[in-house]
Length: 228
Image 1: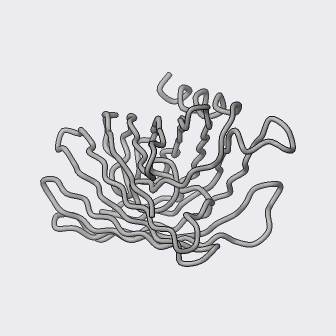
Image 2 (image 1 turned 180 degrees about the vertical axis):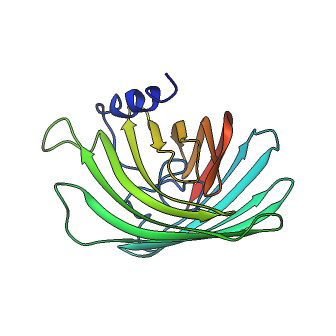
Image 3 (image 1 turned 60 degrees about the horizontal axis):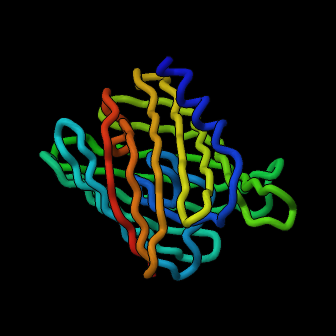
């Protein structure tokens, strides 16, 4: 059941009514929770975000993302808990599309006081869906894969994500990263986001994503973001 549920939730999110909103994922790039999308925050745009993850060792994850150009962005993250970690992510959106998917490539690095240095490279393709040709996107889904190497573990890991844009400035998103290689557990996240007046947004959800890897159990997280 644990392995089937993520697919059901991810593919079930494909109808409704609103525009795509850029939100930093936990690795400081526009995305869902752990996985990136092919979206870019926008040239000159700046988004800061912070979340509290209620794992056994409660973590605070703060990050910023800046749009370097219309097709690239750069992000940085600070993770505070029993240990301190720093991360950086860059992403470049490729021109054109592949079967309706906008492609992007990128990479992340992480270093910390009590972890080995790690890195991740990824490719993602995102496709927006609308009720009709003239409608704004009502949903989008992302397919991709990453290669992750951290703490003597490495693997090529496919992933899928889906986002549903509801009325009232609210969205729901889900993601699933396959367990492969040295990673014995999959990553699964479910998040609800809401845009408030004044460029503020908030999110609440469940995840087992932590840094570039994951923890065993799923726990709640909550956070806010602010855009300039």
